[in-house]
Length: 182
Image (tube, rainbow, N blue to C red; front, top):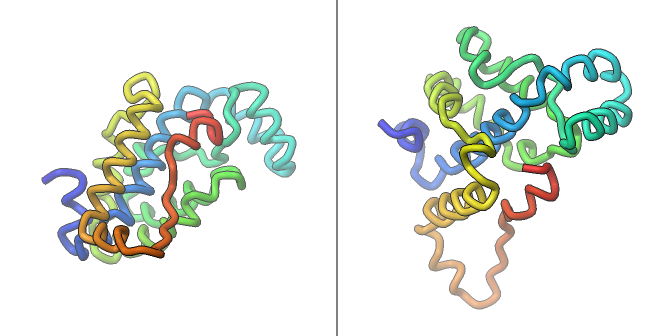
């Protein structure tokens, strides 16, 4: 079973993109942060009560305009299956305030749904094992992948896009490198 098929099995086909897209973004950010954890952790300990200072120190020290204050990674979350739902939500919430993509994509709701359907561990496990590190998947390739997934997931509704006057909002991954240095 492929990674995309896990959330599809108990869901409507049109809804499983609600899992795949935010989890792909989460994994990419997780891979980016992995290289900087040893630098970020002491900054979090020192400046966690002052988010503006923490953001400035993280950017100065790592070049990243975002951070996560959680000790978790997608892989380490798997070590506590009983608390996976709560810990994953906490991990997502512990991103810096400028990373509102998960709130916009309603990932917390999807995490709850996956937990209810008993597929959360499988989904997190699959994504934890996908290498989306920038050394492996370039920004351009990441953008192409994101566009491909959006197009694929929305093929059933593409007819609506040809109707005059229809307006749709999309996320453009090509903006992400300037937004979060991916």
